[in-house]
Image (cartoon, rainbow, N blue to C red; front, side, top):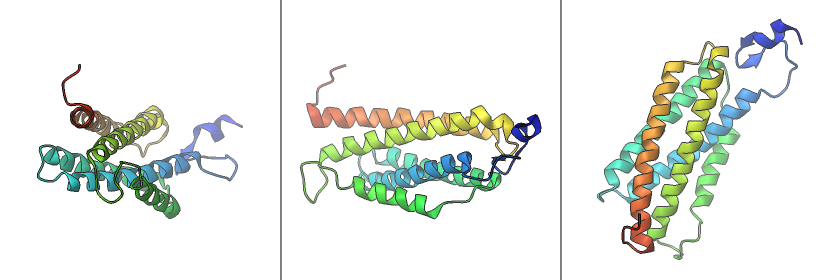
Length: 182
């Protein structure tokens, strides 16, 4: 390939590259699917804990996850990457399947549900943070990527991880034997 075809970036594709799948579009849509699942789980977890000591923190995290998903969609639009509805549906289905976990109860939530949900949210935040880091690493090749905005999103993901870790440890101590063992 010539230098011009490998260095000119337009609409999320390398100009002059063969027609075919757009790796950045696939990547962003995969993260959109994960974001869809994560947002549904965050909202459900926040609702389940409304009125508890962790309720306000979980509501804030859920609200921020919604903002992060919107930021991802804004970035996709700026890059000309279309939303793949089937991937959004896959994210929705994955979250629904996650509700069928074995928590020792057939119908109701258990305290173990909280630990598992907080761990799942924490893993989702790690994935989102990895995506922001990846985009930050290639931002110099895409005029549409706002590096300062990515820095804000990375900082917010770090704070979300801290909150979720704290809530997860508290929940785990309550479920698995209580006493502070650190």
